[in-house]
Image 1 (cartoon, helix red, strand yellow):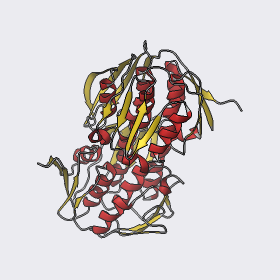
Image 2 (cartoon, rainbow, N blue to C red):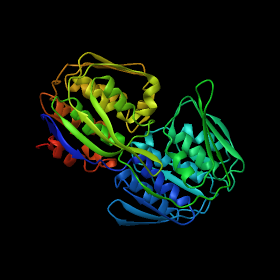
Image 3 (cartoon, rainbow, N blue to C red):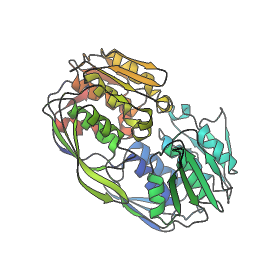
Image 4 (spheres, one colour):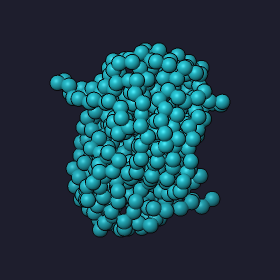
Length: 442
């Protein structure tokens, strides 16, 4: 699918983005482990999350759509899922694949996990190794990539694991396996990663402790042999989805956009912090709590932006927003350097190379220096006029459609159907604010 974004003027309006993808995955998956009926409102009804719905149905949980964004899950209890009759297809959802491995590590039946072409290229070793140490048998045709066959244990071995990367997916997979283990399972990370699993598990009755160690590392522990209680949760708006209209508005003087009900968890707001450092007027309004998570409305007003240096330590709080930050950096005055982006090489695509390739195709000087990204800003509208391949990556597709609106000439994105992975209504929402996104002419 070829989609074209044409230059637009100031954006204005009030919108609400879809439910947070990370929390949506967890709400469905964790509810399947609870004993009883859970209700999830505001669920992201995009391809990734629907893959989670299909997976838990395949494992014996009853999942019903009650209305737009409202779903009920009749869980099977901790350790009560059933052997699937077929392969579990994770689609493009890396979160589902890795967390599901953790769930299955506590169930003594075989299951096969696969995914689309993009997901089958993504590494699973960082999850396979600790789960193997807990007693799960995980086999693959090719190294540790999907498709994988997993057979867990009824009672996995408790584990103390020191992770070399700050990854919520790795941490969550180990904690989920630890729910079934006797005793306490511990995960240490170099720095805190997003903590949605810990928050939700606590709300469901699990004993989860977190602390920062003297050396700056972060430790999370869960006590096993627990029965999870059903939950009733409303999923807040996804800050990674909110980043696209916010970025487009911030880069155009005269814009004024409000995004309502956005997740304001400090482990997810690094992008908005960076925009402020670049000179953008970004304000959190009406702070409140929703389902154990901080939520607020987000106001952004457009203006002139300047290049900044983004430290590597901020990457876990904005790892999915670097593609659209690079687009904003192309419009800023001066050079922006984003450090410590090794994780971008193992996302839905090699996002680091995809960002550089797309920016250069649109007349922006950019380069990767090791794991750092350097973008030379144009101090205004970049040339545009390029054709960008999405590489099966929804965030690359949306980032360069935002660039088309900020550039001097339209930008065409090929493979834009990938947007449905996380943000099916992206183009209508952007157009309602004043963007000009539509199918490219043959």
